Length: 340
Image (cartoon, rainbow, N blue to C red; front, side):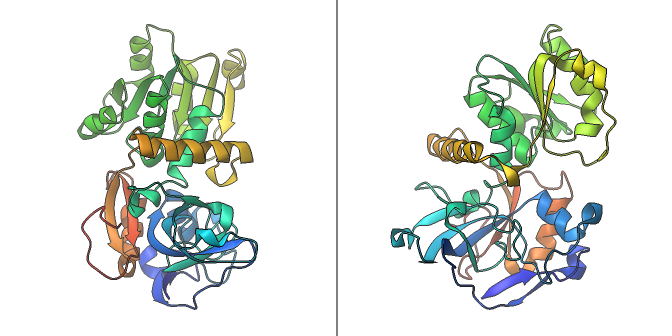
């Protein structure tokens, strides 16, 4: 099979290779999936780059956690009725050397989720990390109907999903973005208010919008960098759910300003969702896809042979609006987003 891999961490152009590998076989409890689309996440590019000391857990790594495709074989103990069905995949490369940047991947059967009819493989490849992270960040502390939710970077992969989930669930959504050009994009996802954090002071605008009351929940993309803002706008007994802290990876916590409000700070890791939260995310993601209340954006599609360019596109924040996807469908040229 054709696959991409790296044997050392570093720049995508230096370490990513594409070539032939042996097709895996499904072990007991696993399915073998013919991958049609492979989604690229920031966690994939950071791991490949060796960000914050990431080391090689295996001698050779096929990257990417998320993907979508068709089950072609099953291991012992797995229902053969799965063969021929369409699935979206999550955690494919979690603690394993074989991710979805290959024509085939074998992974535990419960990590292959039925892809609803009519949903393209490219869309299915964008769900495992971004949509699951957003779902947990929005709903881990209960329903949001009637609440006010601040979504940091509502134009980002997770943030765009979070805006859609919170809006559909009945929340008033305030979102931020770093570009006037993306305001319409975030409003289109359902946000009630969008703030350009480069030209406006987010805390001042949030308090103005809410009449000084602040917000009940914050879905946070950069905890350390935005902590002062979050402390200023969070209501008593509110929740800050953070899934990254890239610019300030070791933030100093303002204990008493948070403690005096009784704030819950939740750290969100999509690869380690509790079983009940994972089940709820899968249920709600598929339902939202069918209902049309969750519409992931495909920003760019690359063939496997250009995976280095795809990684570079994905890791430069703001370069592309939407997710970057690798097309692994059988060798035919495809236009953007048309992988299925």
